[in-house]
Amino acid sequence: MSFFDRITNEVRLMFRRPERMQCAALCYRFKKKTLQPEMLVITSRDTGRWIIPKGWPMDGKKSHEVAAREAWEEAGVKGDANPDSIGDYTYQKGLEHGMSVRCRAQVYSVAVFDMAKRYPEKGSRKLEWVSFTEAANRVAEPELKELILRYEQQLLETIRPDQKSAAG
Image 1 (cartoon, helix red, strand yellow):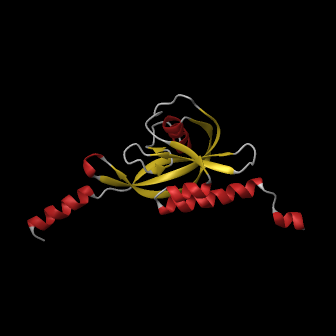
Image 2 (cartoon, rainbow, N blue to C red):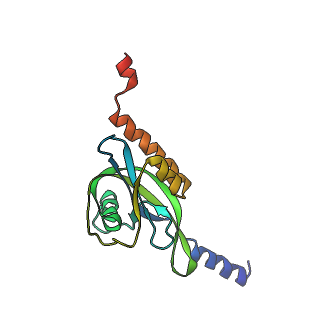
């Protein structure tokens, strides 16, 4: 291997980093009259695409606590985060100067009981409560789309009586 080949190989290794981890919040609630579940989607600050709240891990905080904190900072969500992850997805996070890094977001469900009128990122993002199907249609990441639809089914199974036991 030539000196140039070794340098080229070293530079490639230097820029190939492992996936970065983030903590994400799938925020949901039930409509008051119909009890249909809906979830929160927000826009990213840079591109305006539809996403769910997420952020980097924080020292001294568990992942589900970080997810709940990000939901509050980015959308004013007050809710209870489940400590068990409902899944994960990968995406490319855009960085300054046009660079991007591959990230894996670990997703935690957050049952929302209230929304704050003031929160750190108010005014810098749009937020909407939509059906799970609409949320899956809005987000770009295929793994996140699947996770949203799968979680809706799990949620519906917990609130509807089991048809098999009712028939038996």
